Image 1 (cartoon, rainbow, N blue to C red):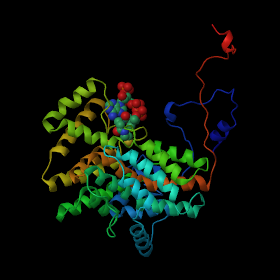
Image 2: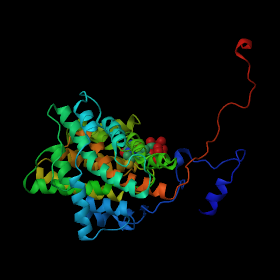
Image 3: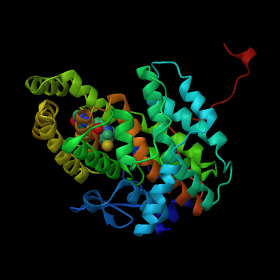
Length: 392
Ligand SMILES: CC(C)(COP(=O)(O)OP(=O)(O)OC[C@H]1O[C@@H](n2cnc3c(N)ncnc32)[C@H](O)[C@@H]1OP(=O)(O)O)[C@@H](O)C(=O)NCCC(=O)NCCS
């Protein structure tokens, strides 16, 4: 603990506390998982530049890195991937929950409840040891895509999917959520999805991760912490932004309407989804990576209208507000081109961020200190209680 933090933790309730609305700029804890690098690398996961990981690795490799602390050897990678594939199965109770869901529910709500339910029947129960937390994390990585796909198929009116026994995570997810995609375009879609999963995997103390760590710091169980995280990710100022970007692009409809639409939104002081970031004020290096994939997909699909619409919004937001796109902006374009239903954009984010969340829960519980900050009191001055029968 550095000196400033020690000073703060010694503060008495009467001292004037340091205060930063929204905890902006506050160092709220220590983590060895992700470094926000102001240089070209953008982010580093356990020391590795996210651009290098996106270029060379698979999502499974990144999951291994985040959960186990180092890159795997080839044998370890094969064993890890095979384990994830073998465990693509939902417990009966959870499968019945998915099969019996009424239509019209938001997939993020289904996911939140489904993950909580998975916690009820997890074989490791309330065991919060490092090894049990790791096993629970790996099971969630295998199970969450099935929860999403089962709900998606129920919404579409077809019978629920129990998963297939082949394919790496990106391939499996694309098949489950958008159907079979063939040829060069299909390969490019799997690559783009793999990259988006890598880019979404971890980002230090973002809102959902911090929420998960707060829950984990009470020594509540891992599924409880992940349920907290899913609930937090849903909001449009956080993970829900990728769905909101897709909704905006659909509403705009064509590149010809984009400029007027965005100027009108800005004139009305509306937030344009997919722009700005609490921490990455100078731009998000991840955005340029997924933008390249979105552009490539739009050529391969012979459908430029999403990408062109997005490019116009991008230009105007930079000119008018000096705001840069964040990761959610071009990811939404890529997902639309893949044919992924827009309400599944944030659940896909869950499939990826699950690795970061679980790694944080494990890290928190391995070196636990209850997270319990202070509030700056803004209520009434002390006053005298008047019993009910004497109150006017
Ligand atoms: C991410 C976000 C919540 C960060 O917000 P923040 O750190 O609280 O930023 P601030 O509210 O201090 O914004 C600073 C200024 O930029 C403006 N701004 C920030 N993001 C904006 C956006 N997406 N569209 C329009 N204006 C935006 C604010 O209105 C504010 O302008 P003002 O000073 O004239 O009032 C914010 O940029 C946002 O709402 N983005 C859209 C949602 C999104 O894409 N979320 C995903 C984040 S990864």
